[in-house]
Image 1 (tube, one colour):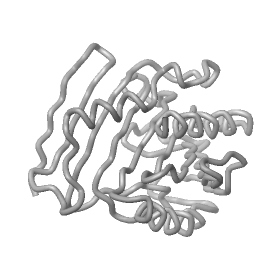
Image 2 (tube, rainbow, N blue to C red):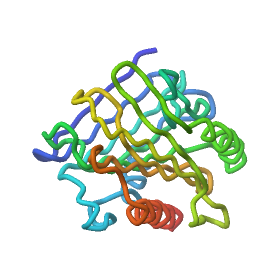
Image 3 (spheres, rainbow, N blue to C red):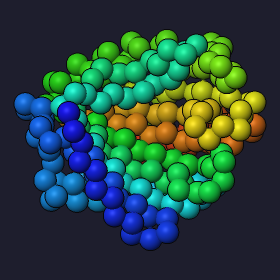
Image 4 (tube, helix red, strand yellow):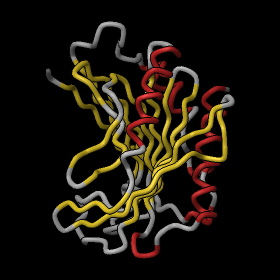
Amino acid sequence: MRLVRMGVALSATAIVTVALSTAPASGSPIPTPSQRATAVKRMLTEADVPSNLNVAPGWEYTVKADKSGLWQGLCDKNGVEISGPLTHLLYQVELGETASSLDPIAMEQKVWQYDSTLLARKDWTIIQRRAKQCTGRSVSGPSVQYLSNGITEQSVEGRQGIWIYVKAPAFGLNPDTEDGYYYALFLVGDTIQSVEYDFIDAKGLSQRKKSMVNQVAVDLAAKWLG
C-alpha cells in the first residue's frame, strides 16, 4: 500500500500533515477536506490547556487513513507494545512536539473515528482489558519505565475513562525513545479519544496534574460532541 503525504508549514511552529491511503478500506472512506476541517475545529488548541501544565510552543495536525490498519499504543512492556485493536482513521493534534528541546513538555489528542458507535464500544472493551497489562517495571534496552493504570474519576456520557501512567525517572537522553507520559482515554460517541501529556521525566507527575489532564480530555470530548 502506498501512502500519499502532504505537509503544509503554516509557521515556524505550526504544521499540517495528511497521510492518506490511495486505496481506502471498505466502510472507512478517506475523509474529505471539509470533514478534516470540521474535525480540527473540535480538537485540541493551546486555549484548552491550563497554563501551569507548561506545554511548549508548537502545533501540528495530522490525519491518517490507512486500510492496513492503525492502532492506539498504550504502553511498552519489556519491549512488547501493548496496543488497542486495528482501526483505520485517526485525527491527531500535537502541541509542543515541534520544540527544539530534547525532552519537551507536550500534549497530544488522538481521535479514532469508527463507522458506528457499536464498533467503537467493541474496541473500547478490548482497550479496557489490554490497558491492565500496563503495570509494573518495564525494561527495554537502556530504558527503564514504571507502569500503572486505572479508572478516571471523570466520566464522558456516563462512562469513566482509563488512565495510564508511564514514569521514566532516568530519561535516556534519546529523543527517539518513548519515555515518561500520562494518558487519559475515553469512549466518546462513535470515537475513542486519548489525551497524552509528556512531562519532564526526572520530575514525574503529581496527582493534581494528572487530574488536570483528565479534565482536558473530558472538555475536549464535550467539544467534539458539540
